Image 1 (cartoon, rainbow, N blue to C red):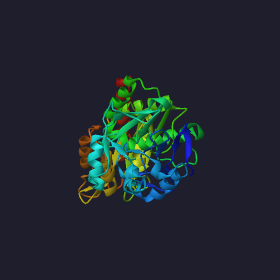
Image 2: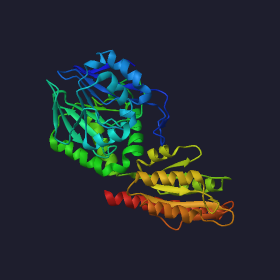
Image 3: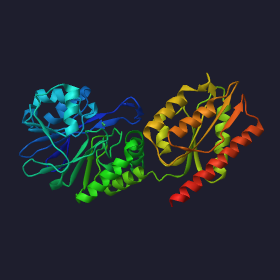
Image 4: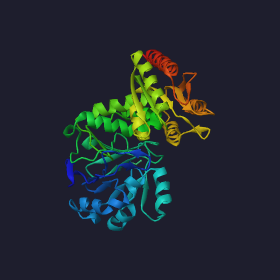
Length: 402
Ligand code: FEO
């Protein structure tokens, strides 16, 4: 996709990765992604961020369509994760810039990744500025959004915030702006991204949003490094991030399970019925059909997470272990949980899931339900009752926050 001018003399020179479905090896990106880089033409011509090594020539041609690469004076490296800095060695050969601008942590990480002590590093921190001529870039370190080195670059003359991973989405489109795509699709992709990549750092998100507000930055465009650029919904994306980070989830639950011979699946449906009886919305998801990142996206608005697995080799099935590990790392807060599962002889799965949930700081409704071999009508009624207890706990949790 051709480079486009997003502001006077500011160009998107990014790359669209149409077909990627596996994002960083842990999250699904069903609609591809983009690696956004921005070129500012000023007295000091400056490139903000780059692309993965795999796309270095695509980036080259994008930039070359505007100017020869050797005309670039500065490269600002807002974040050195390889999806934004993998092309750096290639760019350094072609550009030979006067400065490579990065945070203190970015400097360390650039050295760790590329082992090039002689690059012309220019380390900046929060509050530092860099004149480009008619423009001055203001830097704000945004540690843990998404790595310790991350930072924002703000250009007041353009009311432009280059936000790196924050406010991004995995969405490969021929459109570049928020008012050119379906808003529901855009927000769904934004939420999926947040709840699989940014969620553990929600406290930092709130701090960064407060910091941006405190600085009184006038922003009429947010240009993230993945997906669509925000120009018509700037207030909406800022409000969405505030809401995501506060994790004020609603009267919804996710029942997630794996199953061998469908006994645990029968239990999942009965529990869902019990939850629905309380008026709480529910989504039932089999881990054989849904990727763990899609379950986390569903949990974005849900207060309840009910997990089921049959007992397998005195433990739980691998897909459930995978999900619980993944969810715990993403640190969802304020959730209500419960455990269930069938078993043939030893029956450890419910206790194991309960412990997993507690270790993830989920408040567990106990006791969970175990069913020997195939659940009968009475056992399914027990499952339904567990669903009602979970639904009630969710209602109380949501009301307590009101
Ligand atoms: Fe898109 Fe943390 O890199």
